Length: 163
Image (cartoon, rainbow, N blue to C red):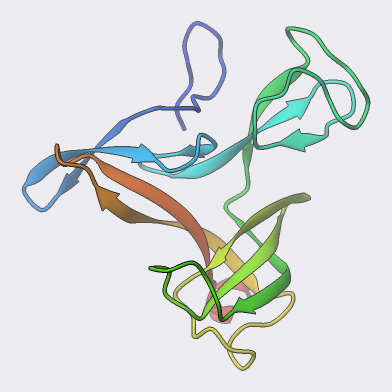
């Protein structure tokens, strides 16, 4: 986990990471500001210092308690594992988006995270409520300079690993 030495806060937002892919060192950028790349990719949220509400986007004030101020929020790491709380199998999407796929809400230690469930057959025989999942990252595409955009999703955890 990266920490800014001057603030003691975890890095998020626009950071670049260099990864070894094959024999080449490539730049990577997260698709969203709250995805932190590196040896142990994870999500971060802005947590209200008054009421502990968590938000993935930057805030000037807390929507739950109304608190505002320069030090109203701190950056907190979100657990990489959680349980699938709700999901839908998407069978119609914008042109160029492969269907079907599974979109869901994952409870990660009390923080709800919206994301796709990946590396699983997108049908009710393979996806279930309460299913344990873990964060995974994957390449979305590259620009003309070879910088790779990286997204995240959640993949099922083998039940043998949970026991």
